[in-house]
Length: 555
Image (cartoon, rainbow, N blue to C red):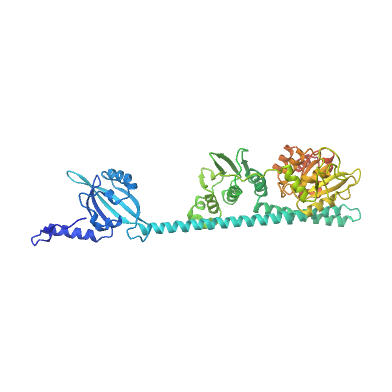
């Protein structure tokens, strides 16, 4: 701390001495801390504000004796010594967080600037210290508000996705299923011989219109929330979406998703799926490109997705903060969504086209549902009214490898000589529609129904059917899980999938897994009975193959 020498107060003080006293008085009155130190950190001079900012009393500093480290906590000494060494050659800036001397705040922030002063015979260092506590608190408050805003945004997106999922499920599971059954029933009525040609045409036209409405509703439900994303992962969902996008837009899109790409949580896979939706929408609206590519890869615990086109570009402004208002919640929303998972979104203008790149850490994948044990299956059977421990098969069931270790409370009987069909679907209206379709067939009869995957396994053992018509999306594990369990139990039943999912990939999976057929529910009125007869006669029946054969047939 500087004290004015006695000679400055003498009557014969020189003008230079008076100017020095005025400068010192000025330094004592400013709101910044000022100090003059040697290169090894000894304080040669400091004003009162300097010591205050470091939480010390002015009396503790003895000029020429007290080192700067005395005012600082020990943990900051290494950085201070490094800064002093560098400050002997150039200006150095930094900041410190210190205890508040008045305890008004837990900590205070001080900004330090160290600059060299070169004298003829030595070099010293001038130090300025500025109060930054208020700015620090404002930044902290701003950061907290920003984090709160991010959390609110994340919650809004989550609620939006949940609502989309609920609406999609209602459209798919209720409206779509009921319309599919209406089509089946109308086609059945049209086949009756007692109606005239005009009435038959009217009914057929009505069935075609209902089928068109059903297709549009199903497409809407899939766009709102792709069910294949939950069941089979990102690759299957992207292939399905691109197939429909190409049909609607005419833009040829190639998809490359290796089998090695790991499953992630539903939220992360949905975020990447939404990036593809937004990117392809921008390709259609802005780029003018006739082609696009989607590539997904994984490395070092990260999944990367790239969407690239070959058009005129969609403009960098759309992907900057300046263009955020213009672009709405599109890419900006996707960037926000990815950041919640520690991911990132980048947009790069290419020489020909644009590249959208998204990355997310894999993290922990969704838990895989383990199949039920025999004990759990028996417990579920008893809950459904079956009695365990029976040594004889249920009435109407055939003996064999698929014989059940329990008996039904009220076994269903079927007529002799008829092929037995078990209908498995979680929607009663669909099960009823299949019953209606098969009720007039002389050699085929529905022997039972199941409403979920667990009951499907139980009833396949109890009833020993010749054919199981199986939905894919059901509670308790889904169609593939139930079908595999039934096949491993030794059942001789043929398995025909009857699904709302018009997916060539699902058909391919069904065929590769050795199942017997796949019929899209939208085509049930036309194809289901044909498929039942084909499969029961030992042949395979898949929608994709039927369509291919129809195109190849001569007119």
